[in-house]
Length: 117
Image (cartoon, rainbow, N blue to C red):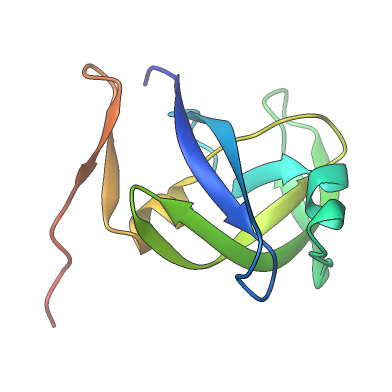
């Protein structure tokens, strides 16, 4: 799957203050990953540590929290990972929560229909 940048906005936990960023899409990341310094500046606090497997197979524990994310006009509270590095990645959990899918050829996000139960 190809990668590309896409504009998103991250809000503080109350959804009152937002910051726009360019996030990498199409990396097969499960969760949205953002720099810890960026999240702390917005007042987002970790709620727990979760194990993550890196590309080389190494497993590390990273803090996760919840805050507002806005993608293509859709907003909601999503899980975010606090990265020790300056990385902005839009993860699959956020995309699926907003019923969006990656079009790697067109390098864009496209809406998908939800499963009706």
